[in-house]
Length: 101
Length: 427
Image (cartoon, rainbow over all chains, first blue to last red; front, side):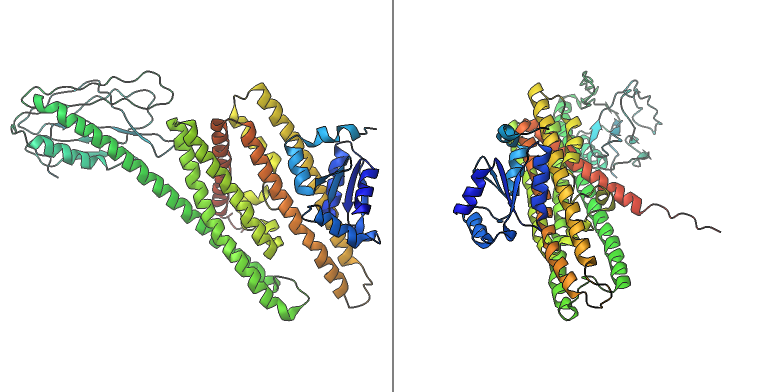
Protein backbone atom coordinates (compact mmCIF):
# COMPACT_ATOMS: atom_id res chain seq x y z
CA UNK A 1 0.00 0.00 0.00
CA UNK A 2 2.71 2.36 1.02
CA UNK A 3 4.89 2.19 -2.01
CA UNK A 4 1.99 2.72 -4.38
CA UNK A 5 0.63 5.71 -2.46
CA UNK A 6 4.07 7.12 -1.96
CA UNK A 7 4.91 6.96 -5.62
CA UNK A 8 1.49 8.26 -6.48
CA UNK A 9 1.89 11.40 -4.40
CA UNK A 10 5.43 12.11 -5.49
CA UNK A 11 4.48 13.39 -8.88
CA UNK A 12 1.47 15.17 -10.37
CA UNK A 13 0.31 12.56 -12.83
CA UNK A 14 1.37 8.98 -12.20
CA UNK A 15 0.61 5.96 -14.34
CA UNK A 16 1.32 2.47 -13.08
CA UNK A 17 2.12 0.28 -16.02
CA UNK A 18 3.87 -2.85 -17.19
CA UNK A 19 6.61 -2.80 -19.76
CA UNK A 20 4.61 -4.78 -22.30
CA UNK A 21 1.32 -2.97 -21.72
CA UNK A 22 0.25 -1.14 -24.85
CA UNK A 23 -2.96 0.16 -23.32
CA UNK A 24 -0.82 1.92 -20.71
CA UNK A 25 1.14 3.38 -23.57
CA UNK A 26 -2.10 4.63 -25.11
CA UNK A 27 -2.97 6.43 -21.88
CA UNK A 28 0.37 8.20 -21.76
CA UNK A 29 -0.15 9.26 -25.37
CA UNK A 30 -3.51 10.75 -24.41
CA UNK A 31 -1.98 12.69 -21.53
CA UNK A 32 0.76 13.90 -23.83
CA UNK A 33 -1.91 15.13 -26.23
CA UNK A 34 -3.50 17.03 -23.35
CA UNK A 35 -0.24 18.68 -22.41
CA UNK A 36 0.54 16.59 -19.37
CA UNK A 37 3.78 14.78 -18.69
CA UNK A 38 2.99 11.59 -16.83
CA UNK A 39 5.40 9.63 -14.69
CA UNK A 40 5.28 5.97 -15.55
CA UNK A 41 6.14 3.23 -13.05
CA UNK A 42 6.51 -0.20 -14.56
CA UNK A 43 5.62 -2.50 -11.75
CA UNK A 44 6.88 -5.59 -13.54
CA UNK A 45 10.32 -4.03 -13.35
CA UNK A 46 9.93 -3.28 -9.65
CA UNK A 47 11.10 -5.79 -7.05
CA UNK A 48 7.93 -5.13 -5.05
CA UNK A 49 5.84 -5.41 -8.18
CA UNK A 50 3.67 -8.27 -6.93
CA UNK A 51 2.66 -6.34 -3.81
CA UNK A 52 1.97 -3.24 -5.83
CA UNK A 53 -0.23 -5.20 -8.17
CA UNK A 54 -2.26 -6.52 -5.25
CA UNK A 55 -2.55 -3.05 -3.80
CA UNK A 56 -3.84 -1.60 -7.03
CA UNK A 57 -6.47 -4.32 -7.31
CA UNK A 58 -7.45 -3.71 -3.68
CA UNK A 59 -7.84 -0.02 -4.41
CA UNK A 60 -10.53 -0.93 -6.89
CA UNK A 61 -8.83 -1.23 -10.27
CA UNK A 62 -10.29 -4.01 -12.41
CA UNK A 63 -6.99 -4.49 -14.15
CA UNK A 64 -3.95 -3.55 -12.09
CA UNK A 65 -2.52 -1.64 -15.02
CA UNK A 66 -2.92 0.97 -16.22
CA UNK A 67 -3.71 2.69 -12.94
CA UNK A 68 -3.83 6.45 -13.12
CA UNK A 69 -3.30 8.85 -10.22
CA UNK A 70 -3.75 12.60 -10.56
CA UNK A 71 -2.65 14.86 -7.73
CA UNK A 72 -2.06 11.82 -5.54
CA UNK A 73 -5.64 10.58 -5.95
CA UNK A 74 -6.67 7.48 -7.84
CA UNK A 75 -8.67 8.28 -10.97
CA UNK A 76 -9.05 4.69 -12.08
CA UNK A 77 -8.18 2.57 -15.06
CA UNK A 78 -8.57 3.18 -18.82
CA UNK A 79 -12.37 3.06 -18.64
CA UNK A 80 -12.58 5.78 -16.02
CA UNK A 81 -10.11 8.04 -17.77
CA UNK A 82 -11.89 7.69 -21.11
CA UNK A 83 -15.33 8.29 -19.61
CA UNK A 84 -14.01 11.30 -17.76
CA UNK A 85 -12.47 12.71 -20.88
CA UNK A 86 -15.58 12.31 -23.00
CA UNK A 87 -17.75 13.87 -20.36
CA UNK A 88 -15.40 16.85 -20.26
CA UNK A 89 -14.11 16.22 -16.76
CA UNK A 90 -10.54 15.19 -17.49
CA UNK A 91 -9.11 18.45 -18.75
CA UNK A 92 -10.27 20.50 -15.73
CA UNK A 93 -8.70 17.86 -13.52
CA UNK A 94 -5.43 18.03 -15.41
CA UNK A 95 -5.36 21.80 -15.70
CA UNK A 96 -3.05 22.46 -12.75
CA UNK A 97 -0.56 19.99 -14.16
CA UNK A 98 -0.52 20.95 -17.79
CA UNK A 99 2.90 21.88 -19.07
CA UNK A 100 2.87 23.22 -22.56
CA UNK A 101 6.36 23.64 -23.93
CA UNK B 1 -67.36 -9.52 -58.97
CA UNK B 2 -70.79 -8.25 -58.11
CA UNK B 3 -70.65 -4.73 -59.34
CA UNK B 4 -74.04 -4.69 -60.91
CA UNK B 5 -75.43 -2.06 -58.62
CA UNK B 6 -72.34 -0.02 -58.23
CA UNK B 7 -72.41 3.55 -59.03
CA UNK B 8 -69.62 5.09 -60.88
CA UNK B 9 -66.54 5.30 -58.85
CA UNK B 10 -63.47 7.09 -59.63
CA UNK B 11 -60.79 6.03 -57.42
CA UNK B 12 -57.24 6.97 -57.57
CA UNK B 13 -54.47 5.81 -55.36
CA UNK B 14 -51.28 7.71 -55.28
CA UNK B 15 -48.22 6.15 -53.93
CA UNK B 16 -45.21 8.10 -52.87
CA UNK B 17 -42.18 6.95 -54.73
CA UNK B 18 -39.78 7.65 -51.92
CA UNK B 19 -41.28 5.65 -49.14
CA UNK B 20 -42.95 3.05 -51.19
CA UNK B 21 -44.93 2.41 -48.06
CA UNK B 22 -47.32 5.14 -47.25
CA UNK B 23 -50.37 5.28 -49.34
CA UNK B 24 -51.96 8.63 -49.56
CA UNK B 25 -55.29 8.99 -51.11
CA UNK B 26 -56.30 12.05 -52.74
CA UNK B 27 -58.51 12.51 -55.57
CA UNK B 28 -59.54 15.66 -57.17
CA UNK B 29 -62.13 15.41 -59.73
CA UNK B 30 -62.06 18.20 -62.19
CA UNK B 31 -64.95 17.11 -64.20
CA UNK B 32 -67.33 14.37 -63.75
CA UNK B 33 -69.95 13.04 -65.94
CA UNK B 34 -73.14 11.41 -64.99
CA UNK B 35 -73.76 7.97 -66.15
CA UNK B 36 -76.69 6.79 -68.04
CA UNK B 37 -77.96 4.22 -65.72
CA UNK B 38 -79.51 1.59 -67.81
CA UNK B 39 -76.98 1.05 -70.44
CA UNK B 40 -73.38 0.34 -70.74
CA UNK B 41 -71.63 3.53 -70.83
CA UNK B 42 -68.19 4.39 -71.56
CA UNK B 43 -66.57 6.48 -69.05
CA UNK B 44 -64.12 9.14 -69.43
CA UNK B 45 -63.37 11.34 -66.63
CA UNK B 46 -60.94 14.12 -66.71
CA UNK B 47 -58.97 14.16 -63.61
CA UNK B 48 -57.36 17.17 -62.27
CA UNK B 49 -54.45 15.77 -60.48
CA UNK B 50 -52.88 17.67 -57.71
CA UNK B 51 -49.54 18.91 -58.93
CA UNK B 52 -47.60 17.61 -55.97
CA UNK B 53 -48.76 14.04 -56.36
CA UNK B 54 -46.29 11.64 -57.81
CA UNK B 55 -48.09 8.89 -59.56
CA UNK B 56 -51.47 7.53 -60.34
CA UNK B 57 -51.60 3.91 -59.38
CA UNK B 58 -54.73 2.82 -60.98
CA UNK B 59 -58.07 3.90 -61.97
CA UNK B 60 -61.01 1.71 -61.46
CA UNK B 61 -63.74 2.30 -63.77
CA UNK B 62 -66.83 0.46 -63.14
CA UNK B 63 -69.66 0.10 -65.39
CA UNK B 64 -72.97 0.43 -63.81
CA UNK B 65 -75.88 -1.82 -63.38
CA UNK B 66 -76.33 -4.32 -66.14
CA UNK B 67 -72.84 -5.10 -66.96
CA UNK B 68 -71.16 -6.93 -64.21
CA UNK B 69 -67.65 -6.73 -65.50
CA UNK B 70 -65.65 -3.80 -64.41
CA UNK B 71 -62.74 -2.53 -66.28
CA UNK B 72 -59.49 -2.19 -64.56
CA UNK B 73 -56.76 -0.12 -65.89
CA UNK B 74 -53.81 -0.86 -63.73
CA UNK B 75 -50.74 1.19 -64.07
CA UNK B 76 -47.32 0.67 -62.61
CA UNK B 77 -47.72 0.35 -58.91
CA UNK B 78 -51.06 -1.26 -58.63
CA UNK B 79 -52.54 -1.92 -55.27
CA UNK B 80 -55.46 -4.21 -55.24
CA UNK B 81 -56.78 -3.59 -51.74
CA UNK B 82 -59.40 -1.16 -52.95
CA UNK B 83 -61.07 -4.06 -54.69
CA UNK B 84 -62.36 -5.15 -51.32
CA UNK B 85 -63.73 -1.72 -50.74
CA UNK B 86 -65.58 -1.74 -53.97
CA UNK B 87 -67.07 -5.04 -53.06
CA UNK B 88 -68.26 -3.56 -49.79
CA UNK B 89 -69.59 -0.47 -51.43
CA UNK B 90 -71.37 -2.64 -53.93
CA UNK B 91 -73.14 -4.43 -51.12
CA UNK B 92 -74.13 -1.20 -49.49
CA UNK B 93 -75.73 0.16 -52.55
CA UNK B 94 -77.35 -3.06 -53.54
CA UNK B 95 -79.62 -2.74 -50.60
CA UNK B 96 -81.30 0.30 -51.92
CA UNK B 97 -83.24 -1.00 -54.86
CA UNK B 98 -83.41 1.19 -57.89
CA UNK B 99 -81.18 -0.37 -60.44
CA UNK B 100 -81.86 2.19 -63.06
CA UNK B 101 -80.26 5.13 -61.48
CA UNK B 102 -76.63 5.74 -61.41
CA UNK B 103 -75.00 7.55 -58.68
CA UNK B 104 -71.85 9.40 -58.94
CA UNK B 105 -70.07 9.08 -55.75
CA UNK B 106 -66.92 10.98 -55.61
CA UNK B 107 -65.14 11.66 -52.43
CA UNK B 108 -62.22 13.84 -51.72
CA UNK B 109 -60.05 13.10 -48.79
CA UNK B 110 -57.56 15.36 -47.08
CA UNK B 111 -54.13 14.26 -48.01
CA UNK B 112 -51.24 14.11 -45.67
CA UNK B 113 -48.56 15.80 -47.71
CA UNK B 114 -45.82 17.15 -45.51
CA UNK B 115 -45.05 20.05 -47.71
CA UNK B 116 -48.55 21.15 -48.28
CA UNK B 117 -50.17 23.53 -45.92
CA UNK B 118 -53.48 23.72 -47.62
CA UNK B 119 -55.77 20.78 -47.56
CA UNK B 120 -57.98 19.71 -50.33
CA UNK B 121 -61.55 20.23 -49.57
CA UNK B 122 -63.62 17.50 -48.18
CA UNK B 123 -66.42 17.25 -50.56
CA UNK B 124 -69.14 14.80 -50.96
CA UNK B 125 -71.64 14.83 -53.69
CA UNK B 126 -74.98 13.65 -52.49
CA UNK B 127 -76.67 11.36 -54.87
CA UNK B 128 -79.66 12.72 -56.62
CA UNK B 129 -82.10 10.05 -55.80
CA UNK B 130 -83.44 8.04 -52.92
CA UNK B 131 -79.94 7.14 -51.86
CA UNK B 132 -79.72 10.51 -50.22
CA UNK B 133 -80.77 9.52 -46.73
CA UNK B 134 -78.51 6.52 -46.76
CA UNK B 135 -75.67 8.44 -48.28
CA UNK B 136 -74.08 9.86 -45.15
CA UNK B 137 -74.02 6.57 -43.23
CA UNK B 138 -72.23 4.44 -45.81
CA UNK B 139 -69.87 7.32 -46.54
CA UNK B 140 -68.61 7.26 -42.95
CA UNK B 141 -68.31 3.52 -43.03
CA UNK B 142 -66.53 3.72 -46.33
CA UNK B 143 -64.09 6.26 -45.05
CA UNK B 144 -63.43 4.19 -41.98
CA UNK B 145 -62.88 1.12 -44.07
CA UNK B 146 -60.66 3.11 -46.38
CA UNK B 147 -58.54 4.14 -43.44
CA UNK B 148 -58.41 0.59 -42.14
CA UNK B 149 -57.39 -0.75 -45.48
CA UNK B 150 -54.75 1.91 -45.82
CA UNK B 151 -53.38 0.91 -42.45
CA UNK B 152 -53.47 -2.77 -43.31
CA UNK B 153 -51.75 -2.09 -46.61
CA UNK B 154 -49.08 -0.03 -44.91
CA UNK B 155 -48.45 -2.69 -42.30
CA UNK B 156 -48.32 -5.34 -44.95
CA UNK B 157 -45.76 -3.40 -46.90
CA UNK B 158 -43.67 -2.85 -43.77
CA UNK B 159 -43.72 -6.55 -43.04
CA UNK B 160 -42.76 -7.35 -46.57
CA UNK B 161 -39.89 -4.88 -46.41
CA UNK B 162 -38.65 -6.37 -43.15
CA UNK B 163 -38.87 -9.85 -44.59
CA UNK B 164 -36.99 -8.88 -47.73
CA UNK B 165 -34.32 -7.24 -45.60
CA UNK B 166 -34.00 -10.43 -43.58
CA UNK B 167 -33.66 -12.42 -46.78
CA UNK B 168 -30.98 -10.06 -48.00
CA UNK B 169 -29.09 -10.40 -44.76
CA UNK B 170 -29.29 -14.16 -44.89
CA UNK B 171 -28.16 -14.19 -48.47
CA UNK B 172 -25.21 -12.02 -47.67
CA UNK B 173 -24.32 -14.20 -44.72
CA UNK B 174 -24.41 -17.17 -47.03
CA UNK B 175 -22.01 -15.44 -49.42
CA UNK B 176 -19.72 -14.62 -46.51
CA UNK B 177 -19.81 -18.18 -45.25
CA UNK B 178 -18.93 -19.49 -48.69
CA UNK B 179 -16.03 -17.09 -48.91
CA UNK B 180 -14.88 -18.06 -45.45
CA UNK B 181 -15.06 -21.72 -46.33
CA UNK B 182 -13.01 -21.13 -49.42
CA UNK B 183 -10.43 -19.20 -47.46
CA UNK B 184 -10.17 -21.83 -44.76
CA UNK B 185 -9.77 -24.73 -47.16
CA UNK B 186 -7.09 -22.82 -49.02
CA UNK B 187 -5.11 -21.97 -45.97
CA UNK B 188 -5.71 -25.28 -44.35
CA UNK B 189 -5.55 -24.02 -40.83
CA UNK B 190 -7.81 -21.45 -39.19
CA UNK B 191 -6.20 -20.95 -35.80
CA UNK B 192 -2.59 -21.15 -36.99
CA UNK B 193 -1.69 -22.91 -33.77
CA UNK B 194 1.54 -24.58 -32.84
CA UNK B 195 -0.21 -27.04 -30.60
CA UNK B 196 -1.70 -29.12 -33.38
CA UNK B 197 -3.04 -31.76 -31.13
CA UNK B 198 -5.40 -29.60 -29.19
CA UNK B 199 -6.29 -27.02 -31.77
CA UNK B 200 -9.20 -28.99 -33.15
CA UNK B 201 -10.89 -29.11 -29.79
CA UNK B 202 -10.16 -25.48 -29.08
CA UNK B 203 -11.38 -24.26 -32.40
CA UNK B 204 -14.54 -26.24 -31.79
CA UNK B 205 -15.25 -24.05 -28.79
CA UNK B 206 -14.21 -20.99 -30.71
CA UNK B 207 -16.47 -21.85 -33.59
CA UNK B 208 -19.47 -22.40 -31.36
CA UNK B 209 -18.86 -18.99 -29.76
CA UNK B 210 -18.69 -17.49 -33.20
CA UNK B 211 -21.73 -19.41 -34.41
CA UNK B 212 -23.72 -18.19 -31.43
CA UNK B 213 -22.65 -14.62 -32.09
CA UNK B 214 -23.55 -14.82 -35.77
CA UNK B 215 -27.05 -15.95 -34.93
CA UNK B 216 -27.50 -13.31 -32.27
CA UNK B 217 -26.13 -10.64 -34.53
CA UNK B 218 -28.54 -11.60 -37.32
CA UNK B 219 -31.38 -11.13 -34.84
CA UNK B 220 -29.82 -7.90 -33.63
CA UNK B 221 -29.89 -6.45 -37.15
CA UNK B 222 -33.55 -7.44 -37.55
CA UNK B 223 -34.51 -5.77 -34.29
CA UNK B 224 -32.44 -2.75 -35.29
CA UNK B 225 -34.39 -2.45 -38.51
CA UNK B 226 -37.69 -2.68 -36.67
CA UNK B 227 -36.61 -0.01 -34.21
CA UNK B 228 -35.64 2.34 -36.99
CA UNK B 229 -39.06 1.96 -38.57
CA UNK B 230 -40.73 2.58 -35.23
CA UNK B 231 -38.65 5.69 -34.65
CA UNK B 232 -39.47 7.02 -38.05
CA UNK B 233 -43.18 6.44 -37.58
CA UNK B 234 -43.11 7.95 -34.11
CA UNK B 235 -41.27 11.07 -35.23
CA UNK B 236 -43.66 11.59 -38.12
CA UNK B 237 -46.67 11.04 -35.90
CA UNK B 238 -45.47 13.63 -33.37
CA UNK B 239 -45.96 11.45 -30.32
CA UNK B 240 -45.30 12.79 -26.84
CA UNK B 241 -41.82 13.19 -25.45
CA UNK B 242 -42.49 10.62 -22.77
CA UNK B 243 -43.30 7.95 -25.32
CA UNK B 244 -40.37 9.04 -27.47
CA UNK B 245 -38.08 8.72 -24.46
CA UNK B 246 -39.00 5.04 -24.22
CA UNK B 247 -38.03 4.48 -27.86
CA UNK B 248 -34.76 6.34 -27.36
CA UNK B 249 -33.88 4.28 -24.31
CA UNK B 250 -34.54 1.01 -26.08
CA UNK B 251 -32.54 2.19 -29.09
CA UNK B 252 -29.56 3.03 -26.91
CA UNK B 253 -29.95 -0.21 -24.97
CA UNK B 254 -29.87 -2.08 -28.24
CA UNK B 255 -26.43 -0.71 -29.08
CA UNK B 256 -25.19 -1.53 -25.59
CA UNK B 257 -26.44 -5.05 -26.12
CA UNK B 258 -24.26 -5.31 -29.23
CA UNK B 259 -21.20 -4.22 -27.28
CA UNK B 260 -21.92 -6.92 -24.69
CA UNK B 261 -22.23 -9.53 -27.42
CA UNK B 262 -18.97 -8.40 -28.96
CA UNK B 263 -17.19 -8.56 -25.65
CA UNK B 264 -18.25 -12.18 -25.20
CA UNK B 265 -17.18 -13.32 -28.66
CA UNK B 266 -13.93 -11.33 -28.38
CA UNK B 267 -12.92 -13.59 -25.53
CA UNK B 268 -13.52 -16.60 -27.80
CA UNK B 269 -11.75 -15.15 -30.83
CA UNK B 270 -10.64 -11.54 -30.86
CA UNK B 271 -9.40 -11.79 -34.44
CA UNK B 272 -12.92 -12.62 -35.51
CA UNK B 273 -14.21 -9.38 -34.03
CA UNK B 274 -11.38 -7.25 -35.35
CA UNK B 275 -11.56 -8.72 -38.84
CA UNK B 276 -15.12 -7.43 -39.08
CA UNK B 277 -16.09 -10.48 -41.10
CA UNK B 278 -19.38 -10.48 -39.21
CA UNK B 279 -20.29 -7.17 -40.81
CA UNK B 280 -21.09 -6.37 -44.39
CA UNK B 281 -18.30 -5.32 -46.72
CA UNK B 282 -19.11 -1.62 -46.83
CA UNK B 283 -19.27 -1.47 -43.03
CA UNK B 284 -15.94 -3.25 -42.86
CA UNK B 285 -14.42 -0.54 -45.00
CA UNK B 286 -14.97 1.92 -42.14
CA UNK B 287 -13.93 -0.50 -39.43
CA UNK B 288 -11.74 0.70 -36.59
CA UNK B 289 -10.76 -1.79 -33.91
CA UNK B 290 -13.74 -4.00 -34.59
CA UNK B 291 -16.44 -1.39 -35.13
CA UNK B 292 -17.32 2.11 -36.20
CA UNK B 293 -15.22 5.13 -35.28
CA UNK B 294 -16.93 7.26 -32.63
CA UNK B 295 -15.80 10.43 -34.38
CA UNK B 296 -17.34 9.10 -37.60
CA UNK B 297 -20.57 8.54 -35.72
CA UNK B 298 -20.61 12.19 -34.68
CA UNK B 299 -19.97 13.32 -38.25
CA UNK B 300 -22.99 11.33 -39.40
CA UNK B 301 -25.26 12.47 -36.56
CA UNK B 302 -24.64 16.17 -36.13
CA UNK B 303 -25.94 17.43 -39.49
CA UNK B 304 -29.22 15.62 -38.80
CA UNK B 305 -29.76 17.38 -35.50
CA UNK B 306 -30.21 20.99 -36.54
CA UNK B 307 -31.15 23.24 -34.97
CA UNK B 308 -28.84 23.00 -31.99
CA UNK B 309 -28.58 25.62 -29.27
CA UNK B 310 -25.32 27.46 -28.76
CA UNK B 311 -24.66 25.46 -25.63
CA UNK B 312 -25.27 22.22 -27.50
CA UNK B 313 -22.98 23.22 -30.34
CA UNK B 314 -20.22 23.92 -27.84
CA UNK B 315 -20.69 20.62 -26.03
CA UNK B 316 -20.81 18.65 -29.27
CA UNK B 317 -17.65 20.38 -30.38
CA UNK B 318 -15.89 19.42 -27.18
CA UNK B 319 -17.15 15.87 -27.48
CA UNK B 320 -15.85 15.65 -31.03
CA UNK B 321 -12.44 16.78 -29.90
CA UNK B 322 -12.14 14.45 -26.90
CA UNK B 323 -13.41 11.59 -29.05
CA UNK B 324 -10.72 12.25 -31.61
CA UNK B 325 -8.04 12.44 -28.94
CA UNK B 326 -9.14 9.20 -27.32
CA UNK B 327 -9.26 7.49 -30.71
CA UNK B 328 -5.76 8.67 -31.56
CA UNK B 329 -4.45 7.38 -28.26
CA UNK B 330 -6.00 3.96 -28.81
CA UNK B 331 -4.79 3.85 -32.42
CA UNK B 332 -1.24 4.53 -31.32
CA UNK B 333 -1.57 1.89 -28.65
CA UNK B 334 -2.64 -0.57 -31.33
CA UNK B 335 0.36 0.34 -33.46
CA UNK B 336 2.62 -0.26 -30.50
CA UNK B 337 1.01 -3.65 -30.02
CA UNK B 338 1.62 -4.53 -33.67
CA UNK B 339 5.28 -3.58 -33.32
CA UNK B 340 5.57 -5.64 -30.15
CA UNK B 341 4.01 -8.77 -31.64
CA UNK B 342 5.98 -8.37 -34.84
CA UNK B 343 9.31 -8.05 -33.09
CA UNK B 344 8.47 -10.95 -30.80
CA UNK B 345 7.56 -13.26 -33.65
CA UNK B 346 10.55 -12.18 -35.71
CA UNK B 347 12.94 -12.40 -32.79
CA UNK B 348 15.30 -15.15 -31.93
CA UNK B 349 17.78 -16.93 -34.17
CA UNK B 350 16.28 -17.72 -37.55
CA UNK B 351 18.87 -20.35 -38.24
CA UNK B 352 17.30 -22.63 -35.72
CA UNK B 353 14.12 -24.45 -36.53
CA UNK B 354 12.55 -23.85 -33.17
CA UNK B 355 10.13 -20.94 -33.01
CA UNK B 356 7.88 -22.13 -30.25
CA UNK B 357 9.11 -19.70 -27.58
CA UNK B 358 8.65 -16.69 -29.82
CA UNK B 359 5.19 -17.67 -30.96
CA UNK B 360 4.13 -18.58 -27.43
CA UNK B 361 5.28 -15.19 -26.17
CA UNK B 362 3.50 -13.50 -29.01
CA UNK B 363 0.34 -15.32 -27.97
CA UNK B 364 0.53 -13.69 -24.56
CA UNK B 365 0.92 -10.28 -26.08
CA UNK B 366 -2.08 -10.82 -28.33
CA UNK B 367 -4.25 -11.08 -25.23
CA UNK B 368 -3.99 -7.31 -25.07
CA UNK B 369 -6.02 -7.14 -28.26
CA UNK B 370 -9.09 -8.08 -26.27
CA UNK B 371 -8.56 -5.04 -24.02
CA UNK B 372 -8.28 -2.79 -27.04
CA UNK B 373 -11.51 -4.09 -28.53
CA UNK B 374 -13.22 -3.56 -25.18
CA UNK B 375 -11.83 -0.05 -24.92
CA UNK B 376 -12.94 0.80 -28.44
CA UNK B 377 -16.48 -0.40 -27.67
CA UNK B 378 -16.39 1.49 -24.39
CA UNK B 379 -15.54 4.62 -26.35
CA UNK B 380 -18.47 3.99 -28.70
CA UNK B 381 -20.79 3.51 -25.77
CA UNK B 382 -19.60 6.65 -24.00
CA UNK B 383 -19.98 8.70 -27.15
CA UNK B 384 -23.58 7.57 -27.52
CA UNK B 385 -24.30 8.30 -23.88
CA UNK B 386 -22.77 11.75 -24.00
CA UNK B 387 -24.79 12.59 -27.08
CA UNK B 388 -27.98 11.47 -25.42
CA UNK B 389 -27.11 13.70 -22.46
CA UNK B 390 -26.46 16.74 -24.64
CA UNK B 391 -29.53 16.35 -26.85
CA UNK B 392 -33.23 16.72 -26.21
CA UNK B 393 -35.38 13.61 -26.42
CA UNK B 394 -36.61 14.50 -29.87
CA UNK B 395 -33.11 15.26 -31.10
CA UNK B 396 -31.84 12.00 -29.65
CA UNK B 397 -34.59 10.13 -31.45
CA UNK B 398 -33.67 11.81 -34.73
CA UNK B 399 -30.04 11.00 -34.04
CA UNK B 400 -30.74 7.33 -33.44
CA UNK B 401 -32.85 7.20 -36.58
CA UNK B 402 -30.07 8.84 -38.59
CA UNK B 403 -27.46 6.47 -37.22
CA UNK B 404 -29.55 3.36 -37.75
CA UNK B 405 -30.49 4.47 -41.24
CA UNK B 406 -26.83 5.13 -42.05
CA UNK B 407 -25.79 1.59 -41.16
CA UNK B 408 -28.84 0.22 -42.94
CA UNK B 409 -27.77 2.03 -46.09
CA UNK B 410 -24.21 0.76 -45.76
CA UNK B 411 -25.58 -2.76 -45.62
CA UNK B 412 -27.72 -2.11 -48.67
CA UNK B 413 -24.63 -0.78 -50.42
CA UNK B 414 -22.82 -4.00 -49.58
CA UNK B 415 -25.63 -6.12 -50.97
CA UNK B 416 -25.74 -4.04 -54.12
CA UNK B 417 -22.01 -4.35 -54.49
CA UNK B 418 -22.10 -8.10 -53.97
CA UNK B 419 -24.71 -8.52 -56.66
CA UNK B 420 -23.29 -6.18 -59.26
CA UNK B 421 -22.99 -7.74 -62.72
CA UNK B 422 -19.64 -9.38 -63.30
CA UNK B 423 -17.17 -7.60 -65.49
CA UNK B 424 -17.12 -9.03 -68.99
CA UNK B 425 -14.19 -11.37 -69.34
CA UNK B 426 -11.45 -10.24 -71.64
CA UNK B 427 -11.38 -11.94 -75.05
